[in-house]
Image 1 (cartoon, rainbow, N blue to C red):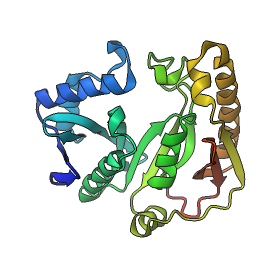
Image 2 (image 1 turned 180 degrees about the horizontal axis):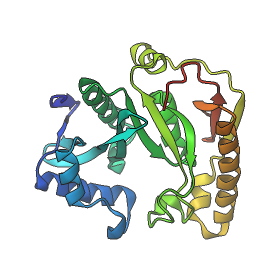
Image 3 (image 1 turned 30 degrees about the horizontal axis):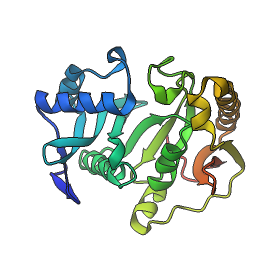
Length: 257
């Protein structure tokens, strides 16, 4: 497993004790605002760490400011890691700590001979989509409707919890080129699907929530149809006013699921 490392003033390391998992539990609640019934319990972190999963944390002194949580998965004869949660305290966002935790997960996976990590993300979350596709080099070609049901998190705005499945092929040309050069492979999109910058406000205000629901429904149909035709999300463009656009094309590597 990757050793303890430093990221500026923060210490990044694996968690192993119940006391540490209680800190993860508390930070999870702070980040997402779930009711207790929807939180991953401390016992699950304990079990995960014993069966091949990992709980990684970033600490400033003894204060936990970010964490990442993954579980082992197995599908179609392939072992992979499912990165279930990545949470960062508000004041530490946009500092690079989320990416560094993901890279630590990548190191752990490769040391174990695992070449695929997956996680899910909300297609309406513009910054998160950009991070996953452009900063990490993940692709998406599966759409799950209302994966967790209607959740209590204010981030969801009362909408169905639709999710895209991010596939991070750790040894792919796409990912290795991005990590080695810092340059994202050029994408010539065959189709685009846009998310308006107003989506965050629309989700939080009762009077405009129907606008957010309309965008979600439209994009759900567009992305599902694109995936059925063999396209994948390979790029994500953000414009000067905060809107986001999925860029879809044929993925030339087409690694097997």
